[in-house]
Length: 355
Ligand code: NAD
Ligand code: DAU
Image (tube, rainbow, N blue to C red; front, side):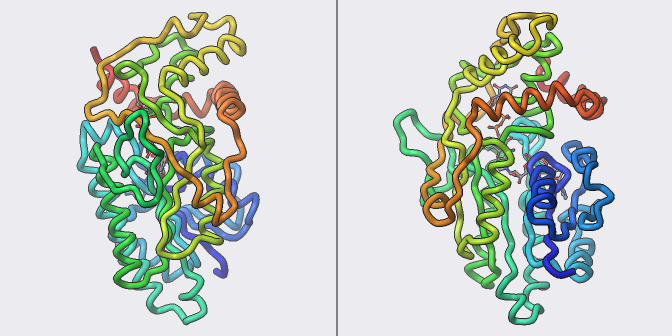
């Protein structure tokens, strides 16, 4: 189908936000290939599930047959590769799936994309893009006075997750340098917003605080992250896809560096206002310092001058407005929360935060 895009991992947090935004603002067909791991949730895409422009295919990016069939049948003009194992703590407890999906899965997708792209007519070959969605974590950790990461910063990943993403980034680079596959790579900072699985800091804290459970803060809570509202990330990806220079990488960030303690206190203050009758108020009384994450990166910060200058993208949402929208979304979506916090989730929380 003309103008179709292939999205991998579109049932996850960022992928589903991306597809919803794409259908409403671009409107061309989307194929969503997702394995539906614990992190994938078709509920996120319920509002477009019967839209003729959207098609879901359950499958693994590592399955070459599935991927090659999708290329052959749908002839996409671009791939947006979100599919990954994405949680650092899970990568520490069990790295295997991270290597399998993030490294080998990306390799398989690249191989199938290359085979497809090489046989396209010249005009379509020119237009084809492979956009790989990556992370700021590949750059490692900054000291308090260090300059923010830019696109020239050397890679120094510290967790199995970030190492697997770094490996994938290198493969993507190599496919451009060696074969000329028209790739684009984006490295983005921490996202937050609707549909984020509540194993990650912000949704975990919203959920725990509103149900009177402890708010676990690793170490001293002074680790810094640069937070970006998810729909801003999705817009940035659309800019890179439309106007990015092939073979290049683009940093994406929110210009909103905050330490974890500040994030948790901000959420608690907003909940004090919105939910004055919760079990524990003020909600900050639930803050609990717990054992630190091994190899915990101290600080990430993104220099986003390149994408601002070359593509004219800049974040729209301030942290203050974005976090309020996010909290309201979680408070209004109890059913979604009930579903995702069923058995497997409870087991993860019980094991990970035990003791
Ligand atoms: P997520 O964990 O919420 O979603 C991942 C999705 O990928 C799920 O739907 C899952 O079912 C699917 N998936 C996993 N393994 C698969 C496989 N083998 N085949 C097909 N599908 C598979 O992740 P997210 O937070 O939405 O992150 C999406 C991408 O963005 C990832 O590549 C991540 O590294 C990157 N990223 C995330 C952030 C962030 O803050 N969340 C920031 C920067 C970059
Ligand atoms: O920087 C981009 C990355 O952001 C993405 O590539 C990852 O996919 C995404 O998961 C995220 O990684 P982080 O490790 O930064 O996110 P997380 O929400 O797990 O943790 C944010 C910070 O909060 C981090 O410093 C660890 C801390 N934390 C997290 C949890 C889950 C706590 O203090 N307590 C917690 O219970």
